[in-house]
Image 1 (spheres, rainbow, N blue to C red):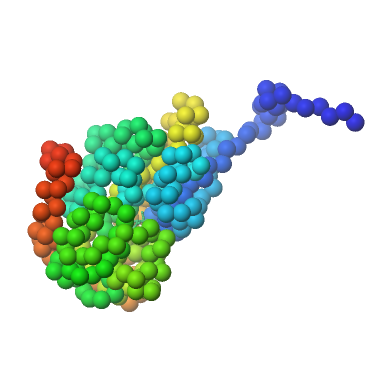
Image 2 (cartoon, rainbow, N blue to C red):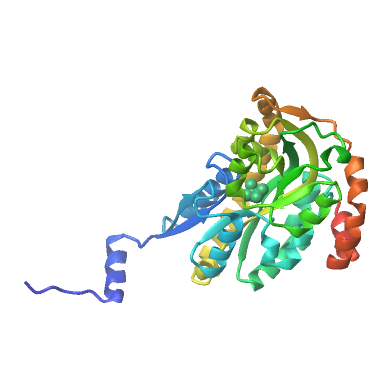
Length: 323
Ligand code: PAF
């Protein structure tokens, strides 16, 4: 029997005539569980994006670092071998140095301040810098204010943290700041952290409440101190390999879906901050709620001289001045 082969044009005409549509599946990765803040934000993005493109685009989600650490995933998105990543800015500065400024300890006063800066002209300017490096930032999502946990002792003031071996992100801005607290920073990709805490390779770590909860660190850490020593922004990043192929209408849909994802992710961070601490106490953690923040701020002051040299005192002041 003679086989008839359709040209791509004839195939498109046939699909249109039958109402069938080609579907593109985009791979999205993130570090934590599907029910965590990253999972909630990513799911909202996927649902909105699928709805807005009438199913021409959909997601396949890879939670729990299934596609590797955040640094690896950002690299894969830049190369186009992964489509999307919902990641903290922790390793992002290794690709876009200007972004490192938002990882300075005690830079942001509170959530309102941080969200206003990230959504305003400063955040938009950083997104442009990302685009120039082959990373399309659809929206600033959120990881949250970071707090310290450890297996050795309660931390009420900076001197209590001195001498503790703590896992940090692979982020020099964090490490330079934490050294001033007397901590021994040990950079390590997140997927290795639970085992490192379990085996005592490190004494502690620092992460926002939603991460401490979803990663079940209460199983391997006794002490939690609400240090809130640094805000950890996050970004929903799309590969230019995908972005450059989108129509103007689809680009709008992706950006709108990103906005809704950010709102949902931030709401989940709020919810976890409100209810998660009681949950962690129930799970056996001893929580220091009244931390002497001033002792940490005082300790970190010398690092600010270094930050001013690296990023410009005016740029730091501009962030601090946002009301
Ligand atoms: O600690 C980290 O590496 C990050 O906070 C995490 C957990 C991967 C979320 O972005």
